[in-house]
Length: 157
Length: 252
Image (tube, rainbow over all chains, first blue to last red; front, side, top):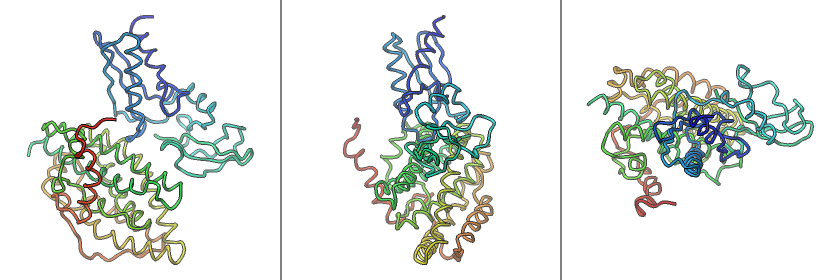
């Protein structure tokens, strides 16, 4: 493994501050990592314009790299092209479901899916309770079979 | 006016609109009529604040006077703010807040769609993110306008009165001036006057469905883009800027 790949893996393993079971790579927030001389240049992209997690992610990336001996770190926020839920990786979707959060519809499917399966029992019989949940990117739904409420990561394209 | 000054002026107007509306909406925190609305209104405020931060940062960089987002948000006086009068109006009851949201977010959505093709790449990138967020703000406001307008006798009365109270301030959104004309000619931002027909149609359709009558055009207050604000604005700024000005450079 070369130096560039080692440093990329370090950054890719940084946890998302709001859903720590997922990394910033899983969520598609990480755009790129490269070495510019001794400086590590990291590009990240905000999910929402007002995402309060961005400052925490920036600090976490810097801390992780400093701990591994990279003194010079530059974290850049990149706006374009805009982040979409299609950037969430397959592993990210599996990890969301394991956290009890229904993942967003896969790329190429309808933004408002006809059925959002319950992440607890798998039933397709679920209803929308609220378009806003714990974070702006999630909606709150309830399962008609097991009656558990659960967050749904809304499609954002 | 140089090209950079023109782009800065456009970023500042839209940024100030977002900053001030965000502050007003944040005043609902813990006071909304139901918990879900508390979350929704503060999330909308957060979207607007995030957009405003990017726009103010961009405006500060373009003007080249060393002012960052905080310098622009907290260290300008009332006469230096160029937000429209609509967004600074007090929250009133919940219906007034919803009426203000309906009128402004419908306008903002049209403006952002026009900015997608801006010759300023940062404005285009901010618009590409914001357009999806504001589409939700508009749906939220339209949904409540329907619920309240076509609800009980009391909710209908209040929603009608709220729309009438906010209506005069909408005229300013479509005004033309030197900045607007130059920005449209340079492809930096769309001419707001051209956005009026689509706004009229969209807002009109919501009002009809909500069984509300469209207010008659009466007086049309103006001046926000020139720094002439309504009485309530000074108190808003006093609250918003107090901490930063009293404890300059404070960190936590």
